[in-house]
Length: 347
Image (cartoon, helix red, strand yellow):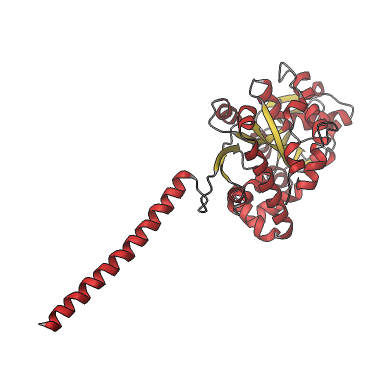
């Protein structure tokens, strides 16, 4: 009888201990789920949610690196990177407050501000350094040979700016060619299909056309450094309410770039995965653009009293848009650039 009671007592004790263990495991799962729902970092820190939209341009790789290596989270941010390829859809997302900011070129940011959605640029990501260019059929050897030819390009965009700049260097104007309107990607595919004489497009179409002997690469953005530049810009109404988040974003991107400079193989793999491309393709694309670190950002942003080179590039984009009737009024370049955060950044 005593043995029987002893066995029963041991059984109850075992069940009680098992119950405690299950409760502990269940409690941990519930807490983890709660942390995910509230945006907690796991250390009691509430993360500030930020939604950014962009395309899959390789110059935006540092955003994925900052997210996937945890630099955004480390600095108190829950950053969602929302890929929207269509320009119209990206503009609508900003206008409808579906996103808080955008990574894009200066000319697009100019159009957005001119349309009544103020933006503040806080970080320069990259500039095209051969990633954009002008392709032409094999029999067209020089820019001057484009006279009277059908050239596919996207009016009012970075492709248009590049074309006008290259034409001007060769004593030509837009009136010397026949414009065929289409996006940069469509211009590339249409050219490779042999349906236009020339195209202003970007990678991978430039390399593809040359590799397949479809034509000549007459000029690239390497001849116009700083002309096609991408920055991170936040809606001004959101930015004014979240100055700490802006500083955190800049600090995280600065740290991500520092990490990339010391760990390129790993960082490139992370960025390629985020962009949805192979690492080899991403590293090939890096040969045609320049990613900017904190020191370069400080130089480009300058200060409120002494604006840097970013101001010059932005003013050029504004003048281009206005002179070509892409925008109806000129935004204030200084109001679009906030040098505060890159100058306060520490890594």
